[in-house]
Image 1: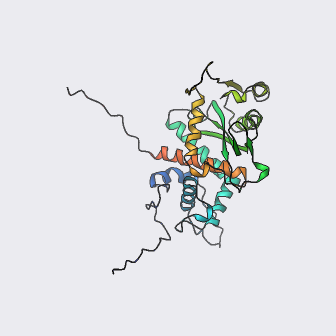
Image 2: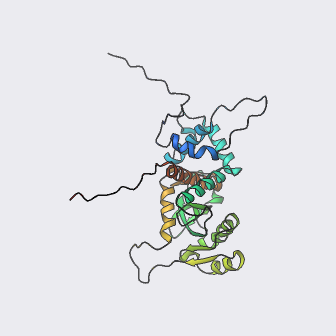
Image 3: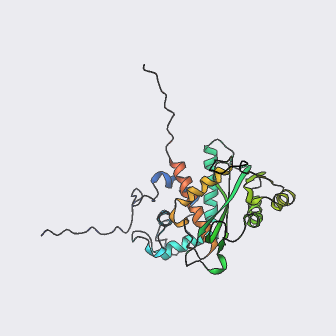
Length: 290
C-alpha cells in the first residue's frame, strides 16, 4: 500500500497567495491599503506579528462564510487576535473611515459627487442566535421574527450611509428618528429622504422641523396585490440583498448590536472593494458583417 504525506498547512501566506474565495486579491489590496492604518510600532517595542492584510482576510472569511470566531482556519491569525482588531476598528472609527473612503471613490468613479444629496431608508428583521441577550432582542409581529432589526440609510446608488441595529420589536417610525439624526449628523449634504409607509406620520413633520430633511413616502399603487418594483425603494432592497449574501449577516450572532452593524459594514466594504478593483473594459463596438 502506498502512503501519501500530507502537505503542512502554511503559516504565512505570500501577498499573491489567495487561499480562499473571500481573500483579498492584489488589486483589491491596492485599493484598500491606503485606507488601512499601519499598526503602531513604538520605539524599542516588538514589531507586529500579523499584517493588516491577513487580519482583513480573516474578517472577510468570517463575514462571508458565517463561521464562528473559534472556527477560523489555522492559516489565519489566532481567532482572539482577529477579534481584537475587529472590535478595535469598530470602536475607534477605523472601520467607518475605511468604508466612507471607499464609498466616496465608488461614487466618483461613477461620475457622481463624493457627498450624496439624497438617501433611501428601510429596515430588515433578522433572527437572533442564543448568543444575543434578551435585553437587545425582540419580537417582530409583522415578520414573525424573534431577533434584531437593522435600519439602513443608503444613497441613490445603494451604498451604505448609516446602519442602526435595534431590537426587532422597535417600529420603523420610532427608530427612524435615531436613524435620520445620525444621517443628518454624518452627512450634512443630504436634503431628501425616500421611505416606505412604515415611516409615515409624525416622523415626516419632525424631520422637516428639527432636521430640515424632506422625507417623501413612496407608497404602493392602489389595489396592488402582487410584487412590483417601486421607484427609489428598490435601491435599499438591493443593498439588503447584497448584505444578506454574507452568511454572518443572515442571522445575528453578536452580543453587541454595534458588532452586528460592523458585520454589515464589512459586507459593504467587500462589495465596494471588489467593484473598485474590477478592470474597466472599454465598450465593445458591434459591426454589421452582413
